[in-house]
Image 1 (cartoon, rainbow, N blue to C red):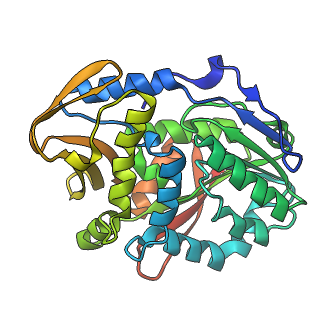
Image 2 (image 1 turned 135 degrees about the vertical axis):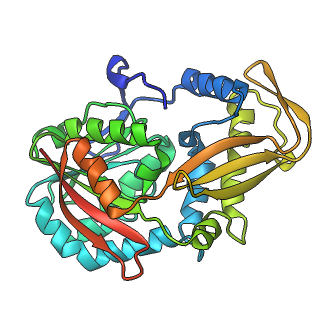
Image 3 (image 1 turned 90 degrees about the horizontal axis):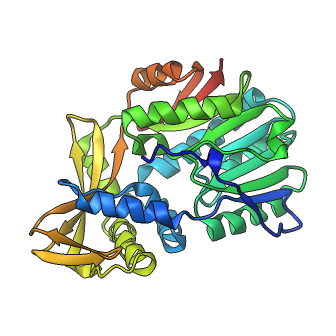
Length: 335
């Protein structure tokens, strides 16, 4: 992932819908997108970071993925949140500010907000501006007692949180096992950055997908309806639209494979034949069956994740798991 930070970038305070306390927009960095595409497609093993999946259409497709019968993570995690919501709310404490990193449609956090009526503030952070704004407004209208302030930004980089967070104890919320999309070193870097932003005495509620039967994993990322394929291929359409690309998505196919040695699902776009594609004013050659590696989803053991969190500056407080051992929720304290 890019190592530059947002500390040198001035956010834009946009016209704020009345229902929101703040809406801070760091903006879409087209130069970074272009750089990552040129670098990734020019590499010996082509790869593009998964954060670029989430334009407006990609965000909608991901919401659809979360409803698929094969995609166990969402329903399992939501079940854990509902079952343990009161216990989690007690750990949050009164007048805390919940900060959700990479929030999407804000469906999961509603479970916690319903269980924690004394929560003081909520700050969703997401890179997809329109999706974030619509979701934040809807949530604020449904929870008028919570001070809601949204931040449009790449959550993998340090950002300045709005005043709603500055005056309250801060607890991160990072569901969906998005931590699995990071390379192990980057996962450690993200958790360390989050710990600094949340501050000593803060906390983190985080969802972590677990190692399990390979057939279950493969099915979750190769659904029968082809929604995950459309989500993956939409990245090529975004490159065409934003970076003057000439990709023909039908000339590529989606595949997700289990890499047991690295304990991760890998998503790829595979060239159906030898071809040459243009983007960003450059030309890129593809051999038949050559791939663009678009995403990893690392799977953890409970003990393995605990060790990672503790290395990043958290103390592990609590773990919750479903009866089938598919998924885990963790509460961490910043120390």
